[in-house]
Length: 361
Ligand SMILES: Nc1ncnc2c1ncn2[C@@H]1O[C@H](COP(=O)(O)OP(=O)(O)OP(=O)(O)O)[C@@H](O)[C@H]1O
Ligand SMILES: [Mg+2]
Image (tube, rainbow, N blue to C red; front, side, top):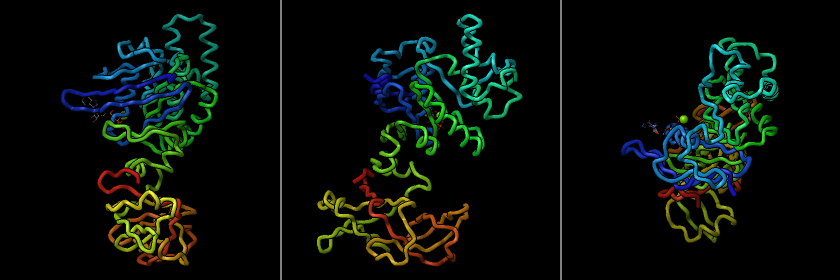
């Protein structure tokens, strides 16, 4: 029995439809990440689960019980907002204990709880400070601690790291990953950062335009994206796409484009034999390996347009016919702008999509 179930959930504001029938099951203690571009309906979904937005149609179940008629306070959940919403006049300890004091729990119990969660998030030495005297990352931890102190069954996070700088964000992401090992609770985490999604999630739910595009483990979504949108959304730098068509020569299938003709591995070719339509070929930068000796039926010849030095690796923006292709290369490899280099395509790295439906083939 799933812990949380969304069934044909829709949301409209007037005639504007934001969610088009979301079906989602979340198992006990699962860390689920909702990810997708700005405006796709992530926060709306989360706020409906929290009870901060009404449901237009469909139902939300906790342990098989419908809950969409319940007030937020009766749903036994805790939410961390993007802006943390801390009380500026209360010190850290009082911020953390706010809900417990409302419940009028015994003083000793409250003190114990505050001590315990402060330890979990690394705030023990800051309990008497006011939020104004804390860094962004520390404030973020107070918001997290306040949610944890409530002992709810379900935790909802709406982009909790989005206003931290890159370094702190990485650090907090690692701390969150550690913390969730010790806090076995249902967590639903919204982000538009695909690295956060990949590193934290048991399960990723990719949304676009109010629809779920695909859900599964990070590995499954990365290796077997269901469509071009998911393929292009997860992975950094993103997957390269080129128009191609399937041609057959001497029993071998090729994806042929303006300036390339790549043999399709036998395993994949079987299901494509009857496929006559135009296709889109997708190849991740990490599946393109610099190799001057590769044969042309398993390589792309790329003209270097821009080189971005990012340390040990450089990211090269290249042209292949009229397509832009990104590859990565060890920075010590000598290259010149305008030069054409050959990159072998790893055969497991070939993704094909129908050019009309954009579904994976
Ligand atoms: N109160 C409202 N009235 C009308 N439209 C709204 C309202 N709240 C949200 N929307 C619209 O619903 C859509 C989904 O919004 P939502 O906040 O869920 O997006 P999101 O995926 O969380 O995006 P972001 O990553 O930018 O936070 C957007 O097009 C937004 O403009
Ligand atoms: Mg949002």
